[in-house]
Amino acid sequence: MSAISTERVKKLSDLDPEGSYTYADYLLWQFKERVELIRGRLFRMTPAPNVQHQRLVTFFTAKLFNFFEKKPCQVFTLPFDVRLPNGKKKGNETTVVQPDLCVICEEAKLDDKGCVGAPDLVIEILSPGNTNLEMREKFQVYEESGVREYWLINPLENVILVYILDEKGIFIGLAPVIGEDILRSHIFPKLEIDLKEIFTTK
Image: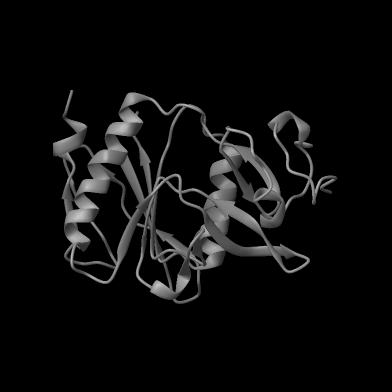
């Protein structure tokens, strides 16, 4: 359990890596390293994403921004806190993640600190720093919290895995989108992205 709940923490090393934390704890942390909480567990984020990761973030941000301009949905990129209702401790959220990109269509979910509840679309880009445990845990909390569509981008393989939430609240995986395919959103049918614009760029 967290041993520090009222003190401001200035060094990541002062935290117990096996401890359990809440959003209230998270707000007290003042170190520079970026971290996420998944069901109270601490996950350190990749300190410096590589060039390809940043290129993909920029590309998809531009595509989504252009598509959603003058529409009610809003696009956000990290660092942007998303608090999900996957377990609570003393009434406080224990899951706080920072997706690479997300689309939020309900204004009521936004406050001055970020998003409270599931975004409609979440996009994560894999990097060498991502662990299998982290990706599995994120998949589960996105599914459980009700993210309607989830894109998982693997830049090493030039492939995008698309998951959509069915009527039972379970992620269903669609056919992988690869190479120079057209990526189409399920929940936003008019959103189409030509992947050869990015995957064939050197």
